[in-house]
Image 1: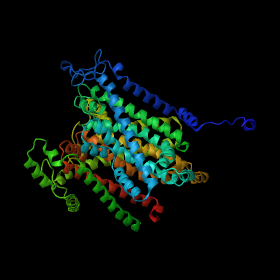
Image 2: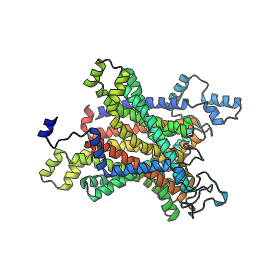
Image 3: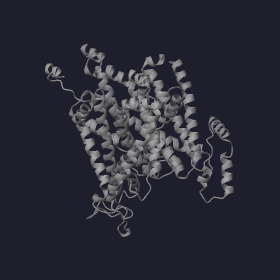
Image 4: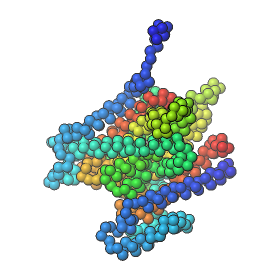
Amino acid sequence: MAQAEATLPSVRYVSQRRRLWRTFTQNRAALVGLAMVAIIVFVAVAAPLLAPHDPLEQSVVNRLTPPSEGYPLGRDDYGRDILSRIIYGARAALLVGIISVAFGGLLGTAMGTVAGFRGGRVETTIMRVVDVMLAFPDLITGLLVAAVLGGGMTNLILAIGLTIAPRFARVAHGPTLSLKNKDFVEAARALGARDGRLLLVHIVPNVAGELLVLASLWTASAIRLEASLSFIGLGVQPPTPSWGQMIRDGTIHLTDVPLFSLAPGIALLLTVLAFNLLGDGLRDALDPKAQA
Amino acid sequence: MAVYALKRILLAVPTLLAVLTLIFIIVRVVPGDPATAALGDYASKEAVEALRQRMGLDKPLYVQYVDFLSGLLRGDLGRSLISSQPVIDQIRFALPHTIELAVAAILIGLVLGIPVGIITAVRRNTMVDYVGRVLSLAGLSFPAFYLGILLLYFFSVRWRLFPTLGAGNFSDPLANLHHLALPAISLGLIETAYIGRMTRSVMINVLGDDYVRTARAKGLSNRVVLLRHAFRAALIPIVSLVGIFAISLIGSSVLTEIVFSRPGLGRLMVGAIRQRDYTTVQSIMVIYACFIVFINLITDLVYGLVDPRVRYE
């Protein structure tokens, strides 16, 4: 070791993780995305400290009032503080976005890797279902599943998760096919590893990078889906504040209190943008070839 | 080409069948009974039973499945659970409005997106490129309905340039176009972001290829190199991705139709979901499925036309 350092003084071992971190931090857009995500998470967690008012507190006499002292964005059709509702809305957005991606991601990864690993009829069946589900745009699948399951936060998470799962399955499936015949997998098998261990310890970690990028980009889409379904009325149910629902309730009052609808939209836009930036940055860090 | 086309068309049949089967299953796994769902919890047993019979829900599942498929072959989509009218009539009214919107949005996306993609690729890492990339990422992050509301607010509510509601009549093209403008622009701008971003990355790949360097070395003008050599090669991936965007457009058009209160398939579907009218929901899903299989088919055929290698695979 000492000899190697003597002959090659400039070469230092850089762990892969550190190299990834370095590529990631050199990407300004990705850092902006990461910072934005951190701020949004902070807002969601610290909502009770940040919000000037109770998001559910109604005041009939102060319905639909324009911005005023103490109510910088005005009050909605129940006299509730719009700013406080936007701050609390971050909770619904992140909760649904993150949990549905975790659920859909795990389910999809399991489907894709098991299909690729097992082959045969299991693979044909799983991947056929995946292909059919992928044919539909995410909103249509989400709409249909949400219609079947009914509204509410839990069903919404299920609906979005089920919409997302096939997309993870497709991405996890391909690499599994080539990985399962690699020597290190054969070696582990020869040492007596069972299928479950081969999948979890040897295959999934090798697909994890791509899945992480997918998870970040799909969190952006899941948040957008949550807002879209809530906008339609199939998502988060009132009175829980949700941006999509606020945007919908506000559209009727565009003429008198435009911020009712426009302000939550900006929060939504920034949140989706943050996760997209983060996902793009991760992809560039993990795959130098894709750097464009 | 004829053989390839025929093969591809025949391949679409099993795909369509698989999709239809999945729709059939999903609509059947509704928790509880669709008839009860449509009539509400307080409906009498007799009324629910009568509706079950009318819907054919009392028959065994495989009979329902065969009825469903044979009905489709005859162009019979069943009757709405709410209005008892044939669903096909409602769809016949809504469909042209949705197609009009989708076509207009794709055209806007192509006309704006492809030049943006080419310019940002050629001027890579300049100010133009950065601005283009930031705008396109913002476009990707814009929920279609929110962009629609912004346009609605500024152009209709504040400046009163466009109508806020509804769609024009097809017999009056000018009024029709006036109603179409804002919804089409709101969807089209988002398409522009997708198409621009993708054209850029495809063009960057192509511009690094050997034959582009050869073309330049021959002394061809920049314009000829870009349009005749690079862009033509870039068209192949672009064609297949435009097909995918066209399909995703079906999804975002649902929201745009709601924002602008336009008649269309999406609004029909959301209305049917709210009223728990499952025959209508199922029928609209069938139309969507046919749409998607058809767009995929067209994409593959155009692919075969643009890239002769595909035909011999």
